[in-house]
Image (cartoon, rainbow, N blue to C red; front, side):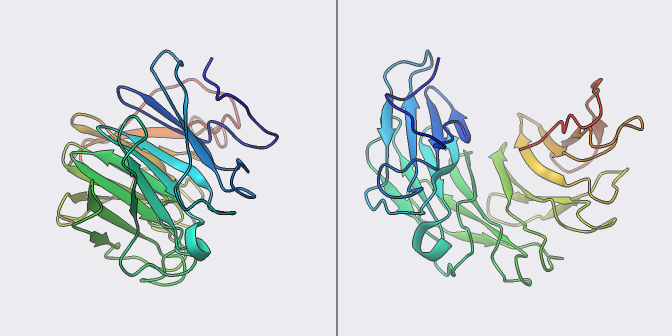
Amino acid sequence: MFAPTSLGTNDRFGYSVGASSKIIVGVPYNDANGNQSGSAVIFDEDGTNPVVLAPSDATSNKYFGWSCAADTKFAVGAYGDTNFQGAVYVYDLDGTNEVKVVAAQRGNSDYFGYSCALGSGKLAVGAPYDDDNGSASGSAYIFNLDGTGEIKLTASDGSNSDQFGRSIAIGSNKVVVGAQYDDPTGSSSGKVYVYNLDGTGEIIITPSDAFVGDQFGAAVAVGIDKIFVSARFAEEDGASNTGIIYSYDLDGTNEVKLPLAVENSDYWGYE
């Protein structure tokens, strides 16, 4: 069993998780350094040797551990940092050598670090409440692992309340950004965007059977040569809110719906 040395009421250990040669688990409501300051725990793959992380500038309401990612480094999101401008902290796999990453032009309540991902030698970060294209339209960022080389992404068709960046993934030299509250085929039907690592080559994906409230893009992932997207409230075979997972080639083509037998209200693909 994976567990830190101690847990408190409402700590929410396991709110986020990332894995490579080691595992990192987010505990964003932990109060060790103030109310909901947050923490994260590193484990060996067998659940031994826990190392508890907290940022060097820990404060109340930072929500450190809200998002976690793992690759050759660990990344931990803390969207509450500095009036909810947000931050992401990068560590070596033993929890040392902390680097704090923030956006150059972050604003209050951007929620930078609400999502984060590592891959292809880069760090990707979502800021879903950024207002560049309207209130809570959202943005995303690409960095080098040391926090340099910032590239800011915004959707070419972004608008109010899309929350572009609420989910994010990186791999196969692509960055995938979810905007589950975008309205391409009705309210919150959802949309996903794909970019090259330099922020170019935007591809917009909507499913062939998109519908109101599906929230396509609620979770995204990148495999070796495929993109996977959840539509957590989508309907399948007449059963409401079953949820659907879609796969696509890296260029957004060749849509496949992953088969699954489910019951009503299973919310498959929920994150």
